Amino acid sequence: MFDKSMSAGPIALIGWLGVVSLVIIALASLILVVAGIAPEGGEPRNFIEAAWESLMRTLDSGTMGGDEGWGYRVVMLGVTLAGIFVVSALIGVLSSGLEAKIAELRKGRSRVLEKGHTIILNWSPSIVDIVSELAVANIGRKGSRVVILADRDKVEMEDEIAAKEPKLHGMRIIIRSGDPCALNDLAIVNPDTAKSIIVLAPEGNDPDAQVIKTVLAITNGPGRRAEPYDIVAEIREARNAELARTVGGDEVQVVLADDLISRILVQSTRQSGLSAVFSELLGFEGSEIYTAKADNVIGMTFGDALGAFDRGTLIGFCDDKTVQVNPGMDRVMKPGDRVVVIADDASAIRARPKDRGAVDASALSAQRAVKEGPERILMLGWNRRGPSIAYELSRFVLPGSSLHVVADSVPLEAEATRLNGRFPNLAITHELADATRAEALKSLDIANYDHIIVLGYTDSMSAQSADTRTLVTLLQIRKLADTAGKYINVVSEMADSRNRALAEVTRADDFVVSNQLVSLMLAQASENRFLSAIFAELLDEKGSEVYIRPASDYVALERPVSFYTIIEAARRRGEVAIGFKHGVTDRGARNMGGVVVNPPKQEMRTYKAGDSVVVIARD
Image (cartoon, rainbow, N blue to C red; front, side, top):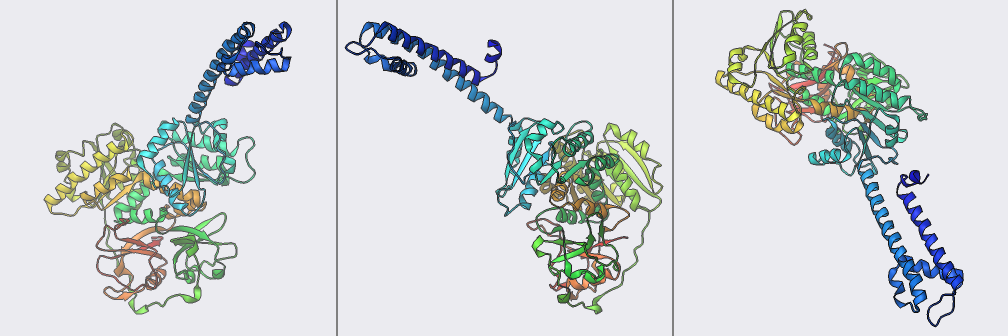
């Protein structure tokens, strides 16, 4: 029993020291009382007085300096020596206990007491971008908190976030260390009082299984809250998405990270500037997508409601179960429906059907036919998104098109062989070579390809190393294009947003920053439970997609028109106009590549050759 009590920690040790002190004081008091020992010239003490004097000498050895009488001095000397032992041991116990407690706190194992916080589970390269976006989303909200739980050292996580210096705008970050799949560790971050929960796909083997297990632990844990959770889960492989939805039910939004990147990358290849449109819609700076009630457009058709929002752009309707983007111009808004609007802020979503601006019908123009044929596409580099990108390309190209993949990646040969022949429209060939070497690129005759896609080796390298190889490849392509005197359409994947500024010198048409796009999507979905369904509709081949088309297909050039006129021109074609793109791109503060989403509708603008209109259309 003594051994067990000694191993119980500082509290037990302090208790034993207290017992020893009481024994010493009681023994000394009995000696003084029974023997009648008193200071020279003083009266004998009773037991209470003797005990008090013994206690004082136990706590302060200097107290005995004024004692007189050798009998009294000897007793008090023994008490003082014992007191020195007790107090020294007590200080040692308290010091070691305090150090142990501080070490435990640094491990991040104490329970979070916050309410209304956002939880991020697991660690990934996207986490700093997610934190930054959540900080922007919560500007003006007092007491906003983000709590991170990951199976890593707390201090390491804090140092990594601090090194990248995210702008927090007053938001606080709380970091805890533990396994998000374990119920006891999950309880540390207090999920029952959280506003939303983001489950990231961790680095390592089989990340989807970890995500699904974490969602299962949240939704089916003992003592879970009665209200539904708002969970956003990042899933890498599409075949695991349905299982995640089955586990989480209506409480989980599934974000297919690799599919999102692949689709935006392929569509950006075919439409320069498209990644800027998606970055604008996904980011909390500028305009983003909101859902709201708008009773004054109930009973109106979708076509009639277009242009009714003077500071927002209507793109669809939704209810609690379904989302419809560009649902058809004759779709009537019913009671209980919500509008899906692109706006700068939720407060800007005000419908004013009677105040719509005038349309200049004489400025409307007819669509011109576009001649299309088979295309030759070159992909330089390889990662796990390669097969998904090949599939997305096959959806858009005509029969007879080809994709040639060049990379020095071991998995390429097996993957490319497996993919060849799977897509009727797209023939896939490959070769193993280092695309950073000028000799390899010269042998490819890159100037004769319609599109070039540069992928990073993110599966086998760090983000910085992969981006370094991508930058070298882009510089080599630029040099060859300048030598040939020919324009080459190039779209590149970047892993780290901080490297995009360096990549600008390569003059590539577009840069898809993969980690940043995933971060934006996860952060937005955590604030809007309809968002993953909205983007699933925008990126699905069966739904409406974002296109950048010549402005001359909508309005007459060199003639000032308002954006209301652009909206009407698109409406007549069954499309929704959401913005425009300058023919000559700028490098303004937000570096949108000339793209403007949700422009002022009353503002008169003259469109020129090379300008484009951004629309949502089914074809």
